Length: 97
Ligand SMILES: [Zn+2]
Image 1 (cartoon, rainbow, N blue to C red):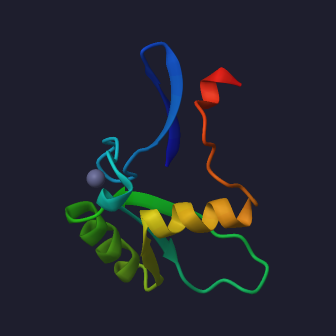
Image 2 (cartoon, rainbow, N blue to C red):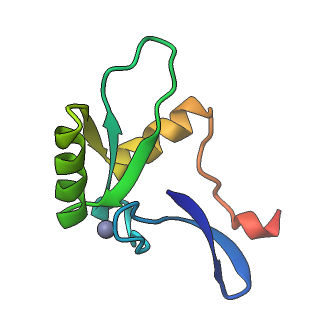
């Protein structure tokens, strides 16, 4: 899940693992997992989890529900999110806007 963490008095959005509730420290250490079986135009929740043990636990959970969908590396999801939001990363400190 996406949450705000306060660091040095600033609100910083960070991803937290939906299984162990720890902050995912880098995009390379997280994955987004989601359920299958939705139709065109429907919205689906994706869960962010640690790339190893928690990812395996979430896969097993979905498989037990017979609703396993898939997963993507968190860095891909962040790239696609920027594309979908028509956003290019800022070249300056966002706190100085
Ligand atoms: Zn975790």
